[in-house]
Image 1 (cartoon, rainbow over the protein chains, first blue to last red):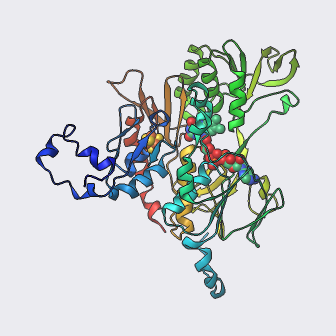
Image 2: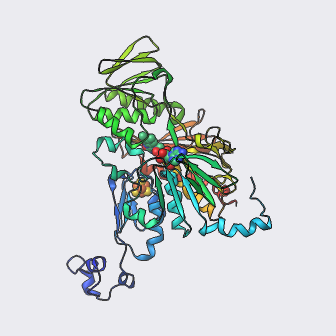
Image 3: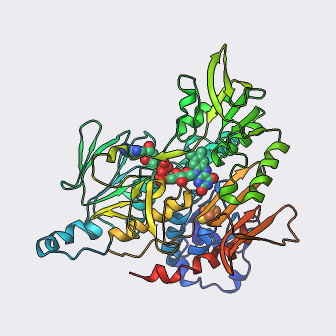
Length: 96
Length: 410
Ligand SMILES: Cc1cc2nc3c(=O)[nH]c(=O)nc-3n(C[C@H](O)[C@H](O)[C@H](O)COP(=O)(O)OP(=O)(O)OC[C@H]3O[C@@H](n4cnc5c(N)ncnc54)[C@H](O)[C@@H]3O)c2cc1C
Ligand code: SF4
């Protein structure tokens, strides 16, 4: 597991998330390399399209501007994230 | 029109020309065209997809051209609808700087202005709009605002103290005015209509928007039009219908735009005010249209609509992708747009029209913000948010629910 690249490694960083030192077995979903979602907030026009497509990954603040709830969502979110990217009218969301 | 019953010979052909292996040609490589192409790939399209675009740039976004691109130091790359990596991943054949010149429906071929011929199984028309010109200003140097090059020219003209005259107080003209003020230019807006935008967002919001501009130092001259103009030294003199003259260093003409359908002139298609489509955004067998150029039958409203909003380009592009894959559902969106002026973002969901009852929703925690609802009888027809994007959602959902039935009709 130690050779898992960043996403998985970062989540299990004991300093950052102490509770994971108590539960050593990582959740199954983290065995796969997670997606890397990025946003360019300045471009967001507050349409809400992303929240509709992938509510577990995106939210909006009081001004309607996108908030990234999970920058490394599990692979099973990929269809929704891709849908959010396609639904965004301002090309805010990136997927690495 | 109802889906055509395939003849048996045609049915043979249908396996290739429909579905995920079809050769798709998209004319117009901007918001609507790119949306269709991206949605096709997301749906597993493995056939070739070609984007023919008159502009030399990879697909980019227009709304920032009158906003952040001017005021926030964005570079052209930031306007991109997709990063280079994403574009590469979509495996599209991008033919940029290539202008379609003619369409032959029976041969299924689009000819470009270099004589190149592009065959298709499925064609998407997404050629958008071209700005209107003013006959009264023929021969006078003016600026317009539709493309990246236009935006760069405007950018070069906007300096602290430079005098900008804007002709037309529509959304693009007023956004341009706000931007120019922000950059320190002196701005005069000339608009023939007494109450600009009242027919689009209601007279109260329109008045509020005009006041906002005046409070920010814009000289807004409603009820006067441009009768002529001449070059005078380094500047331009606009001759107004009220007999006054206006001296400007630069003139931005923003008097609307017309569908870019010249290339379809001899195609036999109905191109009166955009390309006419049925309720599925289908123009003819294997021909579709999306975005600003498409006029389709919205069965929810029972009217022909052509919508010049950014979100419609995305949604209709996706709708067309589904149609190409054989999933025909009527296109019944609730129109939605935003427009930004100074620190105000106005959004409208639904369709405003004169004679609707207006009510204001209290937003006690948000000073200066408001939501206005427009009803016909008990029925919500539109909702306008003034710096209240999140509050708009529930009304947008309510408006969407109205067409749930129509959306499910195949
Ligand atoms: C300055 C500005 C600000 C805006 N701000 C907002 C906003 O705040 N909110 C909002 O909702 N909407 C806004 N809009 C509207 C929004 O940008 C449009 O609705 C959207 O761009 C429509 O996309 P489209 O793909 O249908 O057409 P277009 O973006 O016009 O793209 C059409 C493309 O087709 C190409 N083309 C044309 N003819 C041919 C041909 N014969 N062959 C090949 N290619 C061809 C054109 O060069 C162009 O690249 C704004 C528009 C502008 C210009
Ligand atoms: S879809 Fe895009 S523009 Fe709309 S809220 Fe999400 S990130 Fe912002």
